[in-house]
Image 1 (cartoon, one colour):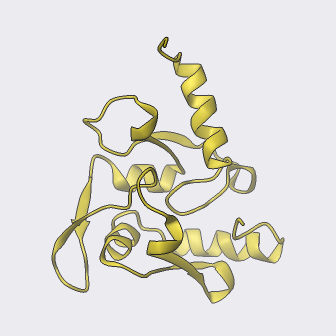
Image 2 (cartoon, helix red, strand yellow):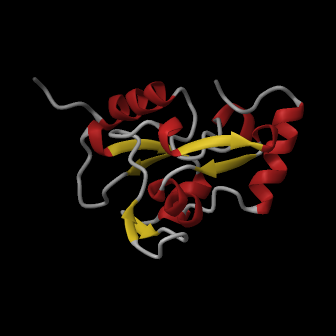
Image 3 (cartoon, rainbow, N blue to C red):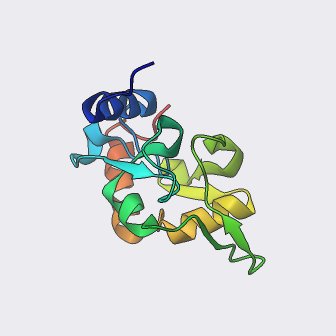
Length: 137
């Protein structure tokens, strides 16, 4: 099997994610910002199982981290991995879809590390919800 070109890889990652951040679920069509191809494990290479689509806010907040502190237990836990875990097992929408509630230690650590509920994002989500464009299905 031949190796994929970077352009093919980017297309597959975008398509697989439906154009939405695989961490906070922000969709490119609503936020108007280009999504990033994010390395789940910065040391893991460019294989499809190590790549996900991330909004600029999540990608820049995550940086090279693969773990973070769960604020409830003060223990270090791995961050959410969209290739190995289901979003709805770790997170849910609350406040009519403008805030992400973490349901697990992994979810709590990820919400904090990636700043998923910072004021500017919550404010934007309110507009997207009012327009009927958020949360994604």
